Image (tube, rainbow, N blue to C red; front, side, top):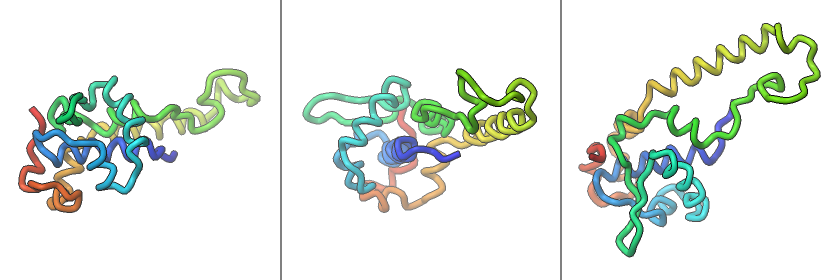
Length: 154
């Protein structure tokens, strides 16, 4: 299984917000820090906002921030919002399947077990865990006050 760029940058955007503490983060700053287009980040922002994983503040001094502590946002939360499909094989998808073993296949059961294990691991890691794993993340991202990098949003 391979995660999409959308998921990758969604996690990065949330990490940036977590590292930025209580301050609002602006999309142009996040885009510059990661070397990605602003348009791409705006596209990712919509599903994250709808799912309550990021909060947007409009206006001249607006931006984005975490609506809850980074410890309360898991990697699983992000992946389930940003990935379209977890079909690891044809038999995971709905519709006509050509395989005569679809209802009694050992491969299907093994892949489902592997996918569930994958989800369990993602649930064990929060955005805060990822930020704490890099003590100098604020400096790496060009944030002004990297000392505030570990404050979760209230």
